Image 1: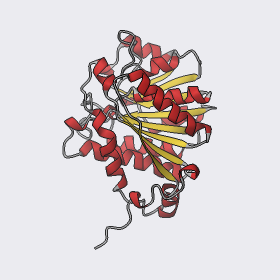
Image 2 (image 1 turned 30 degrees about the horizontal axis):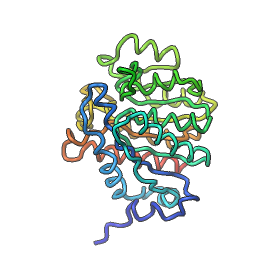
Image 3 (image 1 turned 60 degrees about the vertical axis):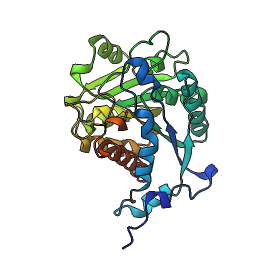
Image 4 (image 1 turned 180 degrees about the vertical axis):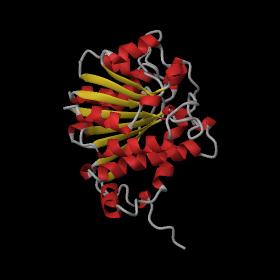
Length: 293
């Protein structure tokens, strides 16, 4: 019996120049090593993309979903070498080219230094942006020995000399893993919500008040460890996977969201590809949201 068409049967059907969505893989985990995290997330992008391509379009929204998928292009892999700053700069150049053409990049990381490379795309494109992050951690730590790492991307964005980062909003914080000074740092430039206070209504309320572009990043360690064991920092008190997926869909559907990244999946510690599957579903839900704008 035929299993029916999969996403791989639609993606890359359109010419590269006329596509609307671009999938970019950024297999970096050197930033996690610098910050003292567990390496392994560099293995995630290829595995997530393979699972994503094997999913089927939504049967209730088949036409809208497949129309978007036919305008989705797999851009490929940004090589990640020894120099983390250079890797992030290369990602930023790719993101900038897409933003300048009003395309939507979806970046599959990698550890969370991915998001600073993502932000650099807005710098190169000279676009104001607010950052929305679903994460157990604030990721506003200072550099380590003048080196960027997976815990520093949003401090770097907020302090960038371009002043293009207008605000930073983080949801899903694990209160037992957030330093008081980092929490206050975020509150001075945006908002911070602990996991118990994170709801879709609060996310949408903040989104609706933004009057410029929004870049979204979702760090898988915001999800409860029972649903996402394969991450760099397991989270026993994280948010539910159904809320996580609903947020991905709502971000995709919101017209102010102009780019998206997914980070911190670590296949080395996964169980039966459970986290990889959830990651692929996350991107699937984001794509469906964009299709229904």
